[in-house]
Amino acid sequence: MNLGFGEVAIILIVALLLFGPKKLPQLGRAAGQTLHEFKRGMKNVMDDDDTDKQKKIESK
Image (tube, rainbow, N blue to C red; front, side):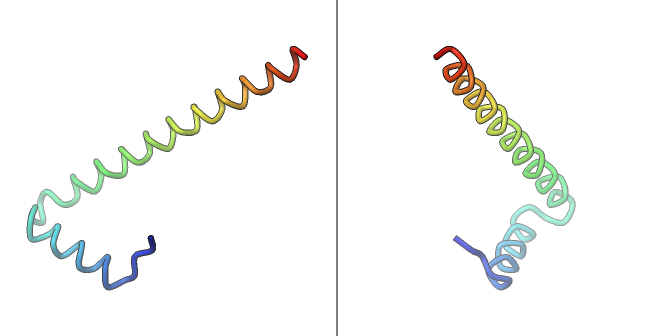
């Protein structure tokens, strides 16, 4: 799902109308932190999975 410039602009305008100019930076910051934490969690899961696979290989 790729969003073009027009779609992103519409989403930003609607968000600005719904939340106002004072809340928008706070919402963006919160969304960025949430995405960062999600990526970190997924990386930890992938690292744990790789470690488990490596342990199984070494035990054979």
